[in-house]
Every structure is written in structure tokens, then in C-alpha cells.
Length: 333
Ligand SMILES: Nc1ncnc2c1ncn2[C@@H]1O[C@H](COP(=O)(O)OP(=O)(O)OP(=O)(O)O)[C@@H](O)[C@H]1O
Ligand SMILES: [Mg+2]
Ligand SMILES: [Zn+2]
Image 1 (cartoon, rainbow, N blue to C red):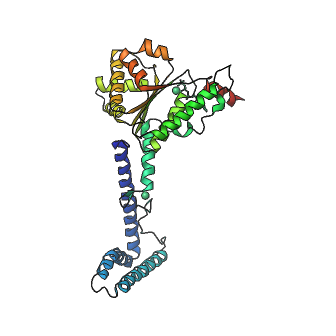
Image 2: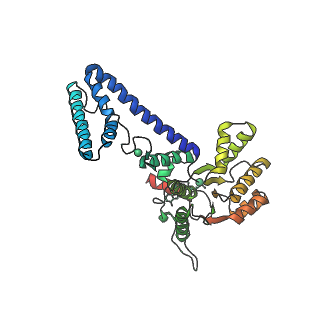
Image 3: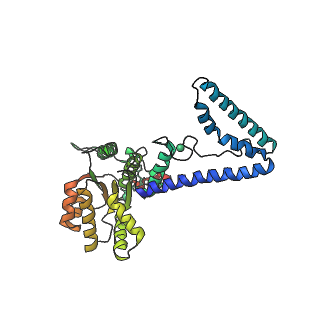
């Protein structure tokens, strides 16, 4: 559980790089400043020994310890002040030779003591967004801007309205995010419905919520998933092999537009294997499809696949009229 090792590795490397850049820049500035004002080198050397001086001061007679440490501190402050003044006189900013980390709290190490710094947590989430396959839409397709007014609230005798149905789907989806990762709550969802009803929108919103909780999420269309398996198997393509591994390993796999992929015996066995492996290891999936239930279940896939879909997924049927068209009409007005 948790972000993929690639994500963590990448972020660690970024931190290492930016820390190194900050150090190198300060070194360049030092060389420049020392050339103009050599005594600065002595001062910086003395300052770098402050830690040692404090340590020395703390040995020996406990009596007078506080005074000795205070004296070291005072000396340090005086040196700092002189340094700032000299830099200014030489025409540099006062802090020119300081190492300037992006994050002062952790000095760009990503850790404050044993705890991960907020800045590294943020960087991990951002990288996890990128690596999820969703990227920018994570900001536009959210729960917040999932508008129920697009669905009719008309009710026929004894029936619920489209809006009621969609409200239930919205609530269940939010619940899915808050339950994600709690043991015993593992679930797979299958979203069905015709085009433009918000299946991808809701799935994206779920993905964001689950990534924000610290889980590795992979989103891909069924076509891309199948293509990756083919390239891994027949072309021995390395990046495809990497994708395939993540389809098996990630905490939440989202397969969009199931049914649009080319189907042959290879893709059927791939899909079976992927579903079966993930179900057996208790890893979650969300699948969306335009196919209606009966077509999906009875005509298109092997019995081994359909029986797993029926047995292990909760089905939600999206209703209403194409929101893509409604939005385009609105924009034209
Ligand atoms: N309830 C909603 N509120 C606001 N925007 C929505 C809503 N539902 C869908 N949209 C927007 O309408 C467009 C189409 O929705 P989406 O892509 O989620 O449909 P879909 O059901 O996945 O369709 P398809 O089956 O064609 O993939 C998107 O831009 C999406 O953000
Ligand atoms: Mg879609
Ligand atoms: Zn930090």
C-alpha cells in the first residue's frame, strides 16, 4: 500500500537535486564574495565551527555552563552581523553566501527529524497525480463540480428521478473514497451507462480522493491497458512492461471504457488474468463502460470474466441525457 516505488524514487531524487543545487549556488556565491572580501572566508569558517564550540562549552564544570554557551551564541551573532555588514559593503545582498533551501523547515531533505515534511508530502501527491494517468483533469472533474442539476428531477408514479439515482451514485462514490484503505471495505465498482453521463468525471473525482489519501492509483482506458499487455508480450517493450506491472500492483486500478478495446483470445485472457489476480489479492478496481449490463455480461466476454464482474463488482447504472452536448449548447448561448 502507498505510492509506487517509482513515485517515491523520483521525488527523493528531486529533493536530492534541489538540495544540491542550493549548496552549489551558495558555494559559487562564497567564491565570488571571498574574492572581493577575503576576511569573509575566515568568518564563514568560524561560523561553521559554532556547533563544535557549543559542544566544547558544554563539557567540563557544570557550573557556569549557561554562561559559556551564551558567550558562544553571542560570538556567533556578532560574527553574523559583521558578515552581513561586510557583504553589504562589498555590494552583495546581506544573505548572499547563505544556503537558500526551498523549504526552510527541512532544508530540502524532506524530513524534519523522523517525520516527513509537509513539502515532501505535497510533492509525493503531485507526482502521484502525474503518474496516475489523469493529470490535469484531476482539477476539473471533481466531486465539487459534479452538478446534479444536469439530471432531470421529474418523477413518474412510484419511480425515482434521474437526479435521485445520480445523487445516490455521488454519495456512494464519496463514501468509497472515505472507506478506501479500511480493511473489510474493499470493493470494486462498475459504472455503466450511455455516453456523456459523468462516468469518467466521477471516476476521476474518486481517483483524486484516493491519491490524496496516499494510495497508488492508475487510470487507463481499456484500449491502452490491452495495448500495454500486447506490447509487453509481443514487442518486449520495457515501458509497457512497467505499465503492466503497475496494473497488477497499484492500490486502485481504474479501467475506463471497457468494451471499446479490440477483443480476441489474447485480450480476453489478459482481462481475465488481471481481474482474477486483483480480486484474489483484495486489490480494488473501478471499471466504466458504455455497454449495457446484458450485452456486457452475456455477449461480449468469456463466462469466466462475466462471472467475476457479477460476483465481485457493485454495479451502478448512470442515467440522464448526454451532458457533453448540454454543456456545448450552454457554451454557445
Ligand atoms: N454531473 C456533472 N456535472 C458537471 N459536469 C459533468 C457532469 N457529468 C459529466 N460532466 C462533464 O461532461 C463531460 C462528459 O462527461 P464524462 O466524460 O464523465 O462522461 P462519460 O459517462 O464518461 O462518457 P463516455 O461514456 O462517452 O466516456 C465531461 O466534460 C464532464 O466533466
Ligand atoms: Mg468516459
Ligand atoms: Zn520541507
